[in-house]
Image (cartoon, rainbow, N blue to C red):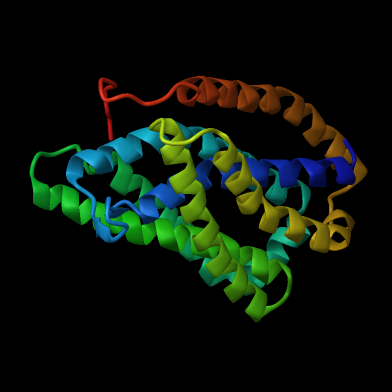
Length: 251
């Protein structure tokens, strides 16, 4: 595998993460609010919050597999790009990691104890962390463009498109809409990643490790990638059928 192939793989892995985890981020960001029959925003009841998280829950771990794989490719194959990104975006990267951990904690812990106070506290953490997670990966993409304005614009855009994507996935899983809105919002979420990859392509490919190292890493990829794909097939099997009221809700 040459540097160009690895760059394509990195882009695909990041797209996979933002599409899968972007749905979780968007659903988490809007967890506390929903649109009522009169078109006005209202507080979402606890039972429907669980339905929302149950709708996107199967995407959580598979999405994180894509992110971990993407980070492995970035650090192992493109260390100069990783160093340049963190040289400017280190605080944003810290926000991303911290919000990622808090978002996951909110999802896993909110229903582990009885009582509304416990759940409400974790739901607030989940909402704030989901917004911060989306905003931070968008901002990192903007930093890759080399512009503070791009970081701000893409950070805001990531928050907006993940909310739309999360709503579309939840509506599809709860049998309210078809698959088309999910496909449209998936393209919207993936667009900033693809655009950034195209803009940074010369620097990215030019900063790859040596050909000998690429060959060694290629052998590792041949072992790891089938496992990643197997996880995605299992995840698709879990979400391919609609979520019903009789399904067990873990979250």
